[in-house]
Image (cartoon, rainbow, N blue to C red; front, side, top):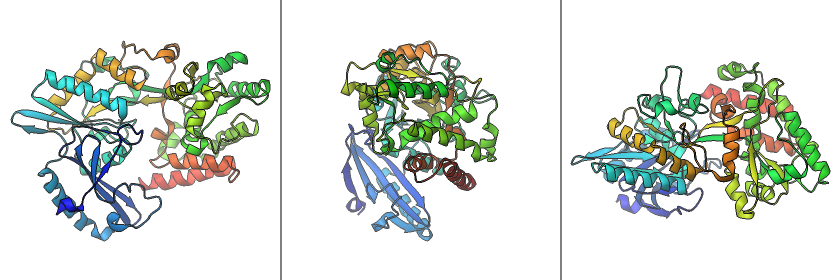
Length: 493
């Protein structure tokens, strides 16, 4: 029997990676991963809050090791048989029901899937419960699968059967655009924050999602350290390097100018994501077209790699950059042992766990090219869009309009510790509020890798940075390796 083939794996909602599950009876996901000639698959069947049932190879989502274990891997020639088995199992588990919402005796059930977890997922669930109290004929099933979200959505896009409402996690236009309904007629659509509007609308005027909040990431700094050494907020890259050298000299090496948790790799990627825009996109003379059409000369990227390596040579980076983790960056900033970090305001909570009295600030990314101005990386953060083929478009729009009410946007944005995505809504973000207000008109560019690099480039961006700092490759080899990956991935899309 099907039940005999299932195993239950408990996931902790408090875990950063575990996600938050609720109202998931009769909800399932099929995850299929392709790697060379092999296919990794598993079925998730959610039974209760915090419980996930897997069929196939529980917990085996990563194919990096290419281990061919048990039922997890099948040759492509068995795909038809496997999918037929999927269909049978899905019918058994869900009475041939799936995503999109359903109707039962006059009651409409909306499905809402989001990438946020923990407190933010709970906040969405809280508001949907308030909504259903006001609209007794509408029910809302909220799913927050955490780290699995992106893979789940890729499968659902491939099947062309999506949730009624879902998050776009930075990809509203590029990845999900063809699946999203146009929301330009909603009452909140004329109040989009100007710094996020271009990220979620197009030239025809289509509004892709409701932006609950927006991401504005730059450099975080310890304001007490900067005051102690007489450092003004750098507006150019040269000023940033000078500030770092001054801190290093005046502190006699006791304070790390820039702390990066390189062992986690993604903080290294943040440096290149931030300054790629500053070097190649935001200046008047830029390489936007070349990057988009595949003709970019990657030798233009070598100076950025060289600049990063020079930071290490000049003593601007922590000596343990390759072994330190993100948590070490938070601790160093909290204890006044570091001045700058390439992180967003999300690091504030981590730092305050170490030192509740720490004073951290947020600054834009300094300009790298003469005549340019500082900017932020960001755009989308927490968003909700509607599947254009949802059988319950009107009910889904009702829910989004409810979410867009000022008090609800404020509640959700406060939970996510980010500025609101709609104009005229002030969110109390504590010490960060003054910086968001100070830089409210500073331009915000989408994360470089989301727009200008093909899917799959993030890992090479990070790993090659580790190799360069370790002395395994040169800056020119760094850019050559990126070109190779860019051409390969661009050609496969």
